[in-house]
Amino acid sequence: MQHLSAPELAAWLEDAGRSRPFLLDVREPWEFEYCHIPGSELMPMASVPLRLDELPEGPLVCICHHGGRSMQVALFLESRGRSEVYNLTGGVDAWAGQVDAGMKRY
Image 1 (cartoon, rainbow, N blue to C red):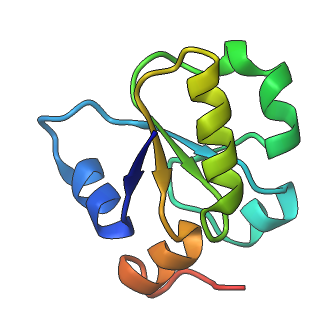
Image 2 (cartoon, rainbow, N blue to C red):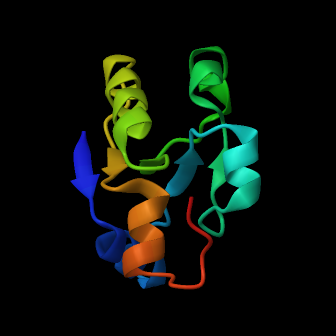
Image 3 (cartoon, rainbow, N blue to C red):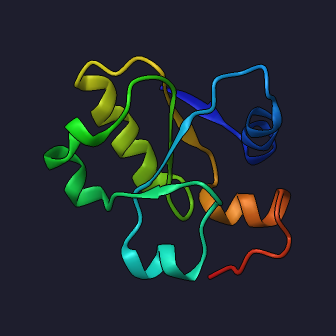
């Protein structure tokens, strides 16, 4: 598993020459409804083991509120053979603080 800062992820998403990563938000539905990174897909942490076949091939960035749950999911995905797995360090809170000042915070 690799770690990405919020500015690094923002730069990646803006880079047209790079494959766009799948943004996997592992928070709960109420958290996702409150705020999320545009383009991210919700799959609550507890549901990930049952929904592995729904995840596309290629780079995948795991996202949560501060980075703890997403790190656990990223490690789990690596243990299941995924190789291009990243954890968003600081989660959506870091994204709101470093990339999107208009995003709601909780």
